[in-house]
Image (cartoon, helix red, strand yellow):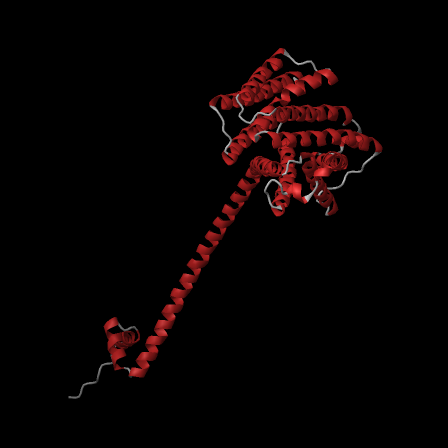
Length: 406
């Protein structure tokens, strides 16, 4: 009645164990990879200190992750900003290089006009109180010579090497340079600044006449026609000038004659290799020194008896103000002439001539506003006509020069 137990098949005997193993694996997976709810339940079951440490650890990890991402973004943004800044800097540098010549030219024109106005204002005030134009001219040239020597001494400009031929030429040119400035100062002391500069608009007339007489440069009909409005304008302005004075008028005319003689003599004497080496600045420097050597004896011969403190202050200007105006006039005179040469180096002579005509207009307007000189509409019209003639003369001369070069 006993029956033998039948042996189980291999797969039958192992089945429960396989089921058990799979079930246990699932329970282990559930313990190791808990769902969020299980994780929160486990966290609540942890001690309070352990929960705080776990929170800090998780916060540190999160902060480091965020900080790393922020650093990466910041570094990338910094590189972009640096590249843009470099590109902007290069663009600004290119614009600056392109605009620098224009800027320096405009600055030279502005300085030329400003110091010319300042010189005429200081000079007129000084000569009105101290009517000693030859002495004032000599002292201003002496101050200018000191500035030239200082420029050479500190090596801002290299001093020219003077030869015997150069000294002879500079001596002649220095004489007419001194006379031109002295006669201008005589005119400024006698008549209004506006009238002196209106008369000095006749410079092209003297230039054409002297060039024809000494250089054989016969002017064309068009060039002669351009002189008509200049002459007519000066005649109209002179006839209606309230401050008209014959000595002042003739002194301004003499200034035109001497300055244009200087230009003609320059073409005659500035032919040697040594003379051609002189640039505008050194030429003005040697002319200033040569003029000073001639001006001092002339001033002593003509106005020595007036060189007393009583005579200097007789016009009501304190001696300190006299000295200040003298120094400022001398400085402005040197600066405006240097800047005039600076402009001439950058533009053609006709443009410089037009700029000089516009400078006269500005000087005339500034002097009328500052000194309150009475002017009539006819006087203004005559001055405008003369200035227009100067500009027209420059245009005709430029056109004729272009035809000759072609």
